[in-house]
Length: 454
Image (cartoon, rainbow, N blue to C red):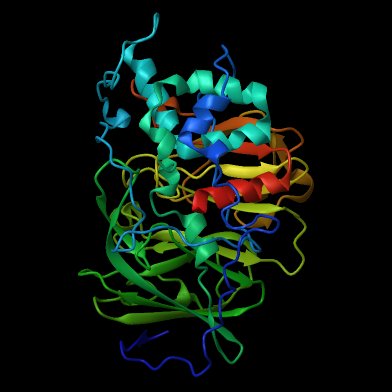
């Protein structure tokens, strides 16, 4: 496909309208904004008892990008970015930072400053959602949580949004503003820009220079059906050349493969270039730069390309895209490091599909606490009778694995890379860590989402 002039006319068909945003079913607007869920209510309602297993990764969570989820708008600054809570930047644990002393009070007997730092990270992860867990998990677990987190300190994170809500998130972007195609006859047309951006790895560290699609990394998920005719137009707003490869697509015309000086000339600054193909291969695929790729992919030119099959053999109630990278900002999941990583959320009786995609340069063994994963597809291809169960799944660079998790009991379960240098250090957890939160009922999921967006 030849480069498209910058002023190329748009297809004559009007863009498809996105669905209106409405509150989750069964949850009234602001229904969680009650005195019980204030910081004072949390302190008053928690009997400070001892012990408990829910310390390190207990969190309330945002939704995965699943069709049918409808969410309200996020509060933003005038520049359109989620507002971080005021905080003092914490040195990166990945860089071997020295643990910080407690902000106030003495260190409990037997603890060190490491324990204070580790607890502070989890406090940031949970934020002001901690009180909402009382009605979900019951008084006993709630009291243990209050004790583990030191609720008697009346710490400031109890009135702050969770870290993962304070930064832009792929799963929220996909749900709130999905990339919707135009129609040019029977061709689905997607338009993306390639931009310089500043990326927040978490809510307190300064942003890092990055690259993105439509001013975000990972880029917006491109989702089509198997057999669709697809045209994707990329406008290069960088001051350098690039080229885009659809990873895993089996092209009829090899000139669509996106490799500069092999199948095309590079896309120069200011140019718009179109890739056009039929989505023959179904499954979890990717799109990313394939020009100066060590630098450009590492800095954020990557995204998910999902081709839904005509007859999906894998039924899931929730769909979670999990893109790992280990270049930009250290060790990240969907462009962020813990505690700014969106948790995986499900209700008892549901099945979650996790689409692991490795866009980095290292292998990462993903370990799920509490649940076995049923691995059903590799690189977009169903495994059939070769499907297998595991709780630790190694994902190499360029690989995609689809795993199903059937949840049958509530709880909070850590979910992380098991190369320990990628997840935890002297200042607590960081990097490639999240949690899978299983709540008793679907209504609890809706309530948590509404609380996040209030």
